[in-house]
Image 1 (cartoon, one colour):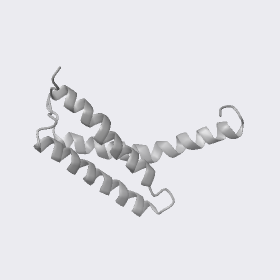
Image 2 (cartoon, one colour):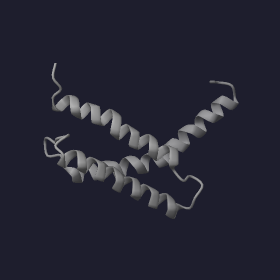
Image 3 (cartoon, helix red, strand yellow):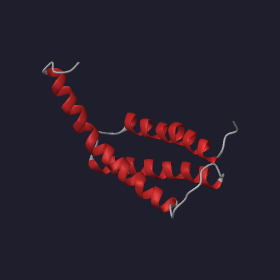
Length: 104
């Protein structure tokens, strides 16, 4: 079986873009001011957009049904902001369950 565009899209999505998300979460400046957190989010959106742009202009991924790089930028912004808001809440909730010995 020869790889096609769908196979390449899945490979890029599950390797490159997943790595960006893990890198984002591991270095997020939770203890710094809101200004630095917003600067970090902006930097990550720009970095992610550049990576996706390289893949797009290198013809490694393709967009369909009206999707374009502008929509991808909007998704990156939404995703990074939501991760920075909701993941600390999830970790706090889990740590409380661990403290109460409900889960391990």
